[in-house]
Amino acid sequence: MTKGGYLAAALLLIGSCMCGSLNCLYAQGTRLTLPNPENITEEVIYDEDDNTYSIGYKLGNSYLEVPKLMTPEEYNRMLMQRSLLSFYLEKYSEELNAMEENKFDFTNMKFDLGPAEKIFGPGGVQVRTSGSSAIKFGYSRNKVDNPSLSVHNRTTGGFDFDEQINLNINATVGDKINMNLNYNTEATFDIDAKMIKLRYEGKEDEIIRLLEAGNISFPTNSSLIQGASSLFGIRTDLQFGKLQLQMVLSQKESSSASVSSQGGQQITDFEIDASSYDENRHFFLAHFFRDCYDENMSMLPNIISGVQITRIEVWVTNKKSNYDNPRNIVAFTDLGETSHISNGIWNALAGPAPSNGANDLYNRISSDYPAARDIDQVAVTLGSFLEGSTDYEKLSNARKLSSSDYTLNSQLGYISLKNALSSDEVLAVAFEYTYGGNSYQVGEFSSDKTDASQSLYVKLLKSNSNSPGSGTWDLMMKNIYSITNGNIQSAQFKLGVYYDSDSTGSRLSYLPESGLKSTPLLRILNLDRLDDNNTPHPNGKFDFIDNS
Image (cartoon, rainbow, N blue to C red):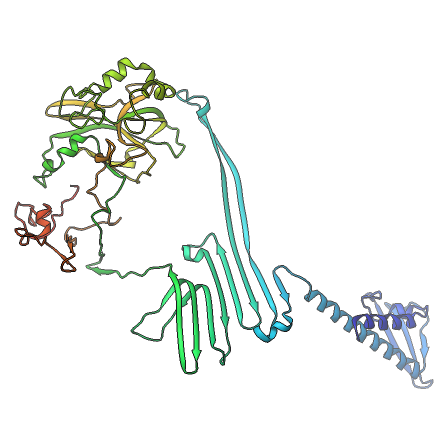
């Protein structure tokens, strides 16, 4: 019987029960009749003398109406009607519950496969979705009442947008295909942030036993060939009779590393190409310090430069919208240079120590082109005889680095930035130092020109298009390599320099040329001049000298 039949039968029984008395109203409560109040009770008394049943309803100890007398046949008929009514209503309720369970739910969708069940197996298509999503959106506005700033730059703002998504989708097609999709923006590792896996599992008598796509693993049962995990690609297991094949085409998204320790300290191996220097982080302040570098380091562990930098200001492109101490600057490539002047219009006046008077650039710009102090007039004023990004760079609201953002080697004349610059960022400095008993200054300090509307003239170390042909290319140091962020102990540090020989197909610690075969590369590169006591006796090991 259908649910419509159950409902019609129940209504027919209720109609036949509508006798006009309270007996029907006080019958067993259902969805279609009024429920009995808790204080109304049904009382049935059998009279053996008359062979009758007395049925009445009481409120407390008092009858609500005159009890009704029934013969045994009438009483049994009433019980049968109640049983049938309860049965049909129960069946109808089951049909309603089944309809609610089968209704469309976005988080648990089910579809029938129809004839396709012969291919994918029973179970239909089922898609389960779970997860959470949170989006934060705001606006931040900062206002600084600094009279040195223009009115436009005193107020800054920006949008603050953040999203947190954790979504998981599981789909099955029959009993053979299973798909999992997970997206989590708060995952610790990148390989866990986005995961997708499609899996087809065949029967025992099928050729394709397993087919996986997406984030897969490739275990092996052999100790000679190690398996792999955290792969992204396709894996398949095939069988042809007693022949079983396992194939995988994937990209590995993880790496393994072994770490050894000795004496409580971690020992790590590094292999670095000569061209993999620490780019855009370490800069000479002028070509003079680069020319004298080898000579100043020739008596290590003692530095014989005679230079002592006493004051420095470092300026970079303001990409952090930090307007605490901004200034407009014009940075010149040839400022302070004598023997390395890239533009022939400047004439060397003194040397070799760099200073504002080392050539006539500073005096001519300051006296003949006063309009260049206005940052908006720089290109118009200097563009007729100087080329932007080659001879000079102009920066509006440049950011001055704090002393914690860089390290200064005051004797060798170079700085090391905490964070490497991007290719389009500009780096410029003004510094003061002593040499040979005299004091020199290159560039202008912010205290020299207190008017914030006037641009500062400083020394350019890196332009926004730094290339081997530019006048600042040699100022970027290319002999510093970054190998670790931890502490390195000289007793445990070992450095070897090797030459990849094409003729022998192996790495050599010497150059296979006549007259050089007996000299290790460490000696040729002047990396082995001292012994363990820092006396000038080569010992075949790299000279480890702190802060050199």
